[in-house]
Image (cartoon, rainbow, N blue to C red; front, side, top):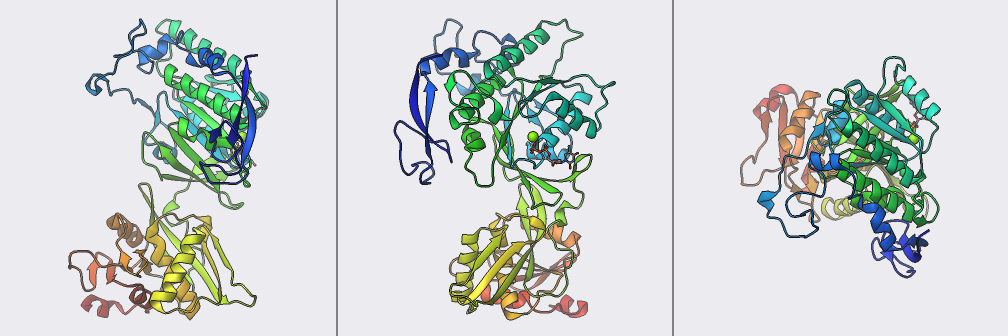
Length: 506
Ligand code: TYD
Ligand code: MG
């Protein structure tokens, strides 16, 4: 065992300090530091370098050799022009829903972290992807840390795996990091040495399920501890970059968040996907929160069935409640998640508070944002919300981060307070400023198109900048009602839809 020293890590964000602190300078959380014994840096270096092996990596262009690192070890800065840019080869991924979240495919040599609560479906998703790759001639090694190989086979059979016809999906039941990396390197070396006919020309996909179960002998703490997660994650990330093999790291996040978990790894991986389940329902969402090779904010909507995860056809309208009628307290907006547009129904319930302090309960939207919007409604539109309990929720278990939903949240609140419904064909779009002004949303065209496709006939939205579009206008199938203030917007949203003939004139 190497010499060890003591460090302190924040369990929340992974911030490292030499001494214990009450409050983390990284994430400002209190009492999150834990003490870890870690191996001496000089001991780490030798094993993390991997520089001696991996000739395949260099031949793929992912290695450390190249312009600038001469073999004699001299180091010089490299002009950008000398660096080749052709290295982002992508493996195709199916279903397309998942490919989009990954930025169009899985980049060779990249590291993807898939985080989520236990039981949400991480292993199911990755087994499904593994089967698809296997059937398309791409080798997969599934590192079984959490389940036995038999359990993984059972899951694969549930997803349609045929053991007699389908080789190429291998399990590696090893949680000791050093042995695991040795085994992986050996696999790659064997492939590199094979003659051309038997050689796999695409890199092997490695799935480590989960990072919390791996442990290195160079770190003196228990598996799943912040120090172990950081070290094992770092070694596997190095391995991916040098070998050209894409690596998936599965990481559990608990509801309470006390396990250090995947947060620690976010900065060292290329892509971070979070798997969200919506409160016991079968709908699951995979969200890209970081992606060096694609759009962040992309969302894949999937359904967990008895035989695996399947993309949802009607994802665009998933967040509209089934019972949309003329009830007060509901407004629909179109939000963007990466390149996709979703129609989302915001529901609000406002009622006089019977107890001392009025309650503010929200689900699927940021509580602080709702408090802010309620304050703007009071000040700018004269609504008396101070003595009321406020409940806000997104139908269908969705979550909204898009500021373009501001006006819909406010309209739902006003509609509930005044007991006046917003007509079902009305879409409300706009970001709201502190002075109550309505601002235009990004990518208006695609939002209107999606709404129009689903039968919406009127949109309340910000007046376009530049003076044009003062009055109402019609897009194909859609009446556009430009507004400048919250008060005006909320009033107009609750106006009953006029008959078609009168709309044409307006
Ligand atoms: P799992 O992928 O094991 O979750 P994780 O790896 O994130 O911990 O699966 C979680 C749940 O999904 C489990 O309760 C069983 C269920 N499930 C299905 O409904 N259908 C399936 O085809 C599979 C494989 C699992
Ligand atoms: Mg699992």
